[in-house]
Image (cartoon, rainbow, N blue to C red; front, side, top):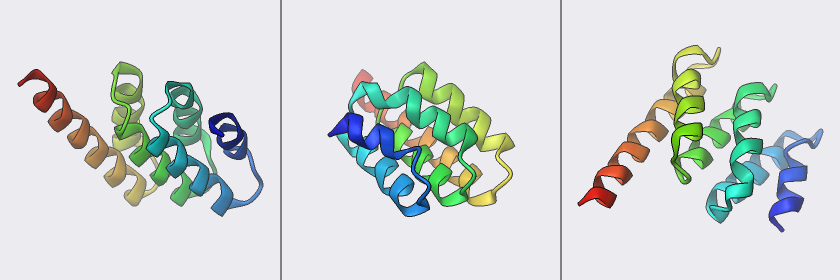
Length: 100
């Protein structure tokens, strides 16, 4: 199912792409990290990029953190920047919980 949803990130339908990003975040399948980053960086629809930012927070790691940091300061949409910033905060809180 994960590979199917990764493929759906390239759908012409905005809602399909947004739902796929959400599913992939919930799956926590590492194969989704790179496609979600590409979605965050390049999707034409703000809502899809926003969902990709939320999804990446569930994975953590340096690759997701780097993409979210860039999006939090340079995405053209306020909501995407805000979602990326919140995702970075979630990742930081999760890291603190893991260390304890």
